[in-house]
Image (cartoon, rainbow, N blue to C red; front, side, top):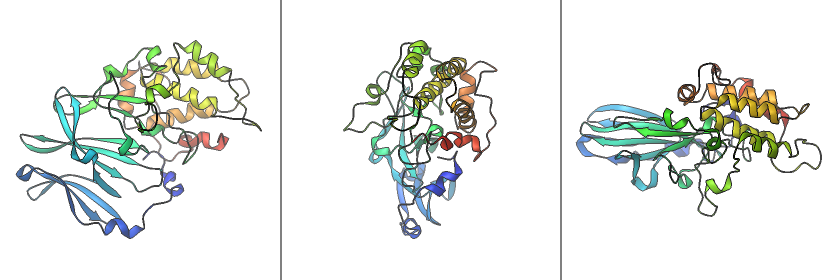
Length: 317
């Protein structure tokens, strides 16, 4: 995850520094004269290069690269297909990126790099029943209330569409009714085989009032005896999904209505949502999905700012 630079200081690397550099050059996609994608040792990690002839057309760097789903074709929708290669930063809890490539009449082309956050590729599900061929939970909202390990991920979801030329956020599909945003519109991408699918694990509400009533009845104190996740985290999850559904004004109403008077965290939650969204790779799509002047969507990206981790000081864990 790129939005919190200090996170790297809190994560223990799994491999010695010289291990990645000892990896040999590997060809992960070979289309002959049309091009190939290679993982090349570089420094303490690897470079992933799309090469055609003697030209490098595209490059990315990470600790380690691997073929996604053993090179199986990934449906993009509208008849499009791609081959995926994952990059991994090398952290104990973080982070993966899915790079997508297509074979075209002009040669192999890079069509997208999708940040997966701390979701392991082995348990990723890019499509959900009845949904688009590709959707991504925005990793900018991972590690919501703590820097590592058990921290909650809010996973506001971005659907994508294949244009025939590019894979891009589908702004029209992002605009969803409130009931969808408070339902299963935003669910985890990770779907381990030993757990129910995400759409059966997420709490759903028919409307904002039902969500406010449920969360308002929970224990907001973090004093002795407090159990379970802080209800402010669930409120933030619902709020971010509303924002990503073009319902930012309703997100603000939910937060400011449900938060009990005198309980800290509302200002920090609103500040952190704004800061994280401003540095999200999908901020342009979220702004396009909302009306002009919508709350939370007009922030300016300042990486590593205190606003990015405002909730950490509350020690909700």
